[in-house]
Image 1 (tube, rainbow, N blue to C red):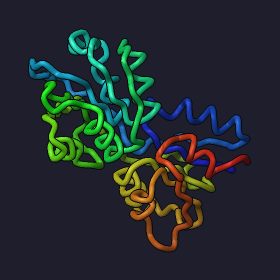
Image 2 (tube, rainbow, N blue to C red):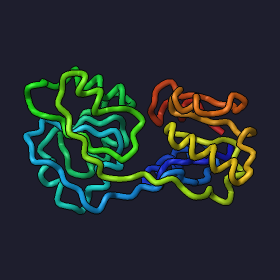
Image 3 (cartoon, rainbow, N blue to C red):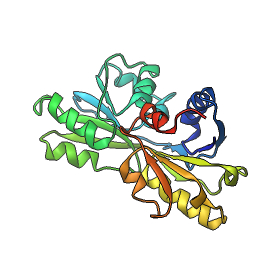
Image 4 (cartoon, one colour):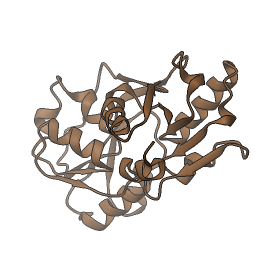
Length: 228
């Protein structure tokens, strides 16, 4: 099957290799472009942990001065991509849990002591869940620091119209996808839409064919796609 991978370029290449190993042809067309913020201030507090709902948060800090003061902290990451990014950035204590922002928040609330200091949440400008609010309603203090912006792509790859299926990873990227296919008159209704979660699938028009991963992780999405 000819598949369109819409993840940011930083995450797309490993996924491309896995799909090709299953016999698929892959077209890369990122729907979001990651832009690190040039000026970031992390308040000096006695944090008990770092929370990550995206690998791009850690990547956006690489090469700067901020990670040096954080690497001693345990990291709670939403999934394998964010956990791997934290490991590559030099963090040693990493827990992967939740699969999405809501699931990670539940894990953080159940695991941490409300009296042991705030949780540092490194995030993008736009998030799919009110992660900070979830932590605070669960009794934890949270400090959100926005370290990057995910900007919408202005166009799709020239070969996008040839795809038989498209992989969608967030409600926001699904909305960008619908906007671009309408703008460029691409017959997306003829494609199968492989969605990481039901929230993403709900964005699509009723007539669009869709398959939803049983869990919001790459392995589950690849199980839905199967071999070519």
